Structures are given as C-alpha cells and as structure tokens.
Length: 273
Image 1 (cartoon, rainbow, N blue to C red):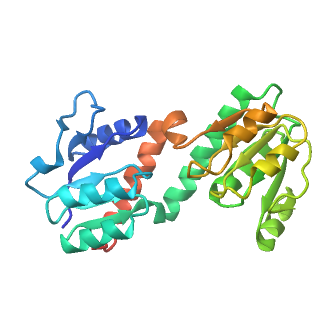
Image 2 (spheres, rainbow, N blue to C red; image 1 turned 90 degrees about the vertical axis):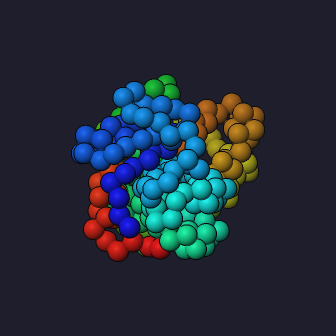
C-alpha cells in the first residue's frame, strides 16, 4: 500500500528540511521523536498510530531501532531508510510492511557523494593549517564518496593520491590523474590530509597511524565507529575528525531534496514486502 501520510524521524537538519518539503508537496506530514519541527505536528508514540504510514528513518538506524519500529507500525505501512537487518525484514514481511533501502538508489548515491565531498572540503579548509591548493591529500578507497572527493580536491589544486585494494580501481584512479597506491598501506608520503572512506579497521590501523610521517589531519567519512583508533591518533598528536552524516551538517537542504526525490522514485517501482 502506498500512502502520502509521512512520518519523519528527525535526526538532524536534513530531516527537518525533508518534513517541510514533503508538506509543501501536499503530503500529510508528522515528525516522530524528541526533535520537533516548527509548524509540523509531532507523533510521540508509534503505538498510537491506527492507519498505515510511510516512516522515514535515518540511514544509520540500527537493527534494534528498525525492529522496534516495524513491530509498532500498523500493517501495510512503509519504512524508508538505509540497509535493513534480516530481523526487521522478516518481521516486516509478517506484517505486510514494505522496507525500502534508499541507499540502493544510484542517483541518490551519486548526489549524496557530491554533498559529502563538499562537506569534506569545507572541514578540510577549516581544520588544516595551510591552503588546500598544492597540498598532498591521500584518499583511501575509490567508491562514490572517494571519487567525488578526489575530483573536488583535485579541482582546487590538491595533489591527490588514492589507495585502493582492487587493481582495477587503482588503474582507474591513475587514468584520472591521481597517484595510485595499494591497500593495506605499506609506505606513506608526507600528506597534509588523509580522507578515509573505507569502513575497515585494517586501512588506518594503529600501526599505520604510528608510521605516518608529518602531522596529517584525518577525516573519517566511512560508516562505523571503529575504523580508526583515536588513541593512536592522540599519541601522535594527530587531529581526527569523525564526520558521520556530513551532508546533514553542511548541506541539509540539498540532502533533504535528494532523499525526497529518492522516495518519489521508489514509489514508481515495485515495493519490497
């Protein structure tokens, strides 16, 4: 069942914008949680709902929250979010609830990567002691966010190196004018900035961090909390910036538009049940 009755879980500013955008489009919109949005009614408890709704969860909602939400929503509802755990998906199937992973939308991923890269550039400008132009920048991984970051930092004059596991990714990076490196990192140049996009503790391990020359600022863009050891950075006196949900901080309105458009695109496709 498809409904224009939306319930938005507001985690950061992009979801505030999203609620307003949906309301402007003529949908019936309420927020859920302890972060109300001016001018939009709030639903304090999901258990009070009696009619199917379309609930929009933050992409990083954990399995416990996903399962709790599905257990409390009325049958026939839809939940939009990131990747859903198997327990939430099984319960949703029992209740005829659709779980839609918006991160499978290629257009959203491309636009979200651009917003993340712009946010990373903004943070780099604020937290590095020298201009980006002419600086040595290392980017780990070569997925959508890494590619957008490499392109943007190169455009402002940085000398970009890309460390990737796959030979095909390194070849692509080299063809685009970046210096290719292998993962895991066995030798490192004198970088002023390192941008991590790989959700793995093996990429920037304590051993790698201890061997880094100079004092690079490290931007953590990958998902997860345990990719980079903060103690290892502290021992070296390195600045580590964890930047989850970066578009929600630096480009919330644009990020909200990307989420809204992905939802609308999913409405035109068969729903997973």
